[in-house]
Amino acid sequence: MHWSDLFAAFGLALVFEGAAYALFPDAMRRMMAQVLELGSGNLRFVGIAAAVLGVGIVWLVRY
Image (cartoon, rainbow, N blue to C red; front, side):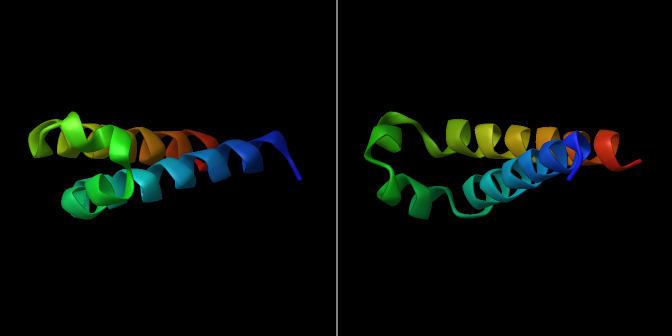
């Protein structure tokens, strides 16, 4: 295992986490009580940002 694998896994985790928030903001809100005060727009923005960051990390590590 290389360090790049660790960073790729971290990047993929961000992609999946971000996709979940971007695609299912209401379901994620129900699952996480702390997020209840955030609006759907804010939640979606955070999810998209995390997904983009994750794709960027995977791209930087793998290519």
